[in-house]
Structure formats: C-alpha cells, structure tokens
Length: 169
Image (cartoon, rainbow, N blue to C red; front, side, top):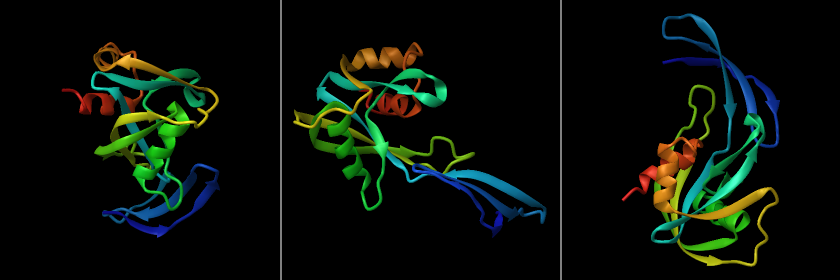
C-alpha cells in the first residue's frame, strides 16, 4: 500500500485534471504518482431492434482519425450514469431509450487515470426532436456485423468492443 504525503494539482482543464502526488511506498521509498483525474463516463449500445444497433462515427483528435463507437459522454456534476447516457443518446443519435439496463463498468486505463466508464444496453428507442451534435454521424448496422467488425479489428474503441461483446447472444 502506498501512502500519499502530498497532493499536487498540475493542471485543471474543462474535462480533466493532471496530478503529481508524492507518495511513500510500502518499502519506505519515496516516489511521484502522475495521474489524470476524470469525472467518469457513461456509454450505451443502442438496439434499434433486436438485431440492429446504432453506432456513431466520430473524429478523435488525440489519434487523428475517425472511430466507430457507441454513444458515450462525460458524467456531469450531479448527474447519475443513467441520466448521462439518456442525455447522450438524444445528443448523439437523436433517440430516447425507454429501457436502459446496466451491463457493467470498467477502468479503461488505471495506470494513469481514475476514469470509470459505466456501460448500458439501451432498447425500445424512440426518435426525438433533439438535434444531433455536429461532427457525429449516426449509423444503423446489424448487431452481427458489429461483432464481425470487432473480430476483424475494424472497431478499435475499447468501450465499444466491451459493450458489443457483453451483449453477444
């Protein structure tokens, strides 16, 4: 177990903070732990019908490319993960889900961030009047095609892979 002796915030941004805390290891040795604090996120695999899902194509600046993903978003202060994903489904694909079921959660990169992503299965989708976010293209595909795309390395986003494979029948 490590003991924190000093917490130091290096940077605070709109989305995250960068920390460099001083710790004492169980051996007594001193070290620095750099990590990103993140508010957490929620994501859902939206089933438009039993065998069809909706994915979004979105440009991701850190890797300079478009990715196929499930709808997802940052948990805002005072919001539950279920409220977050309900909001994101409206914003990213223009649907409300009458059913939102948890399918689990995970830490995507605990070596450098405390981000926790909550995963859901959304079904009984109804179109809304909400305008879809700029830069996001929603696309309906067969669920079996999504599984094939994961197996062939065409879907490479971690949360999307986990959600697709978690719902595999």
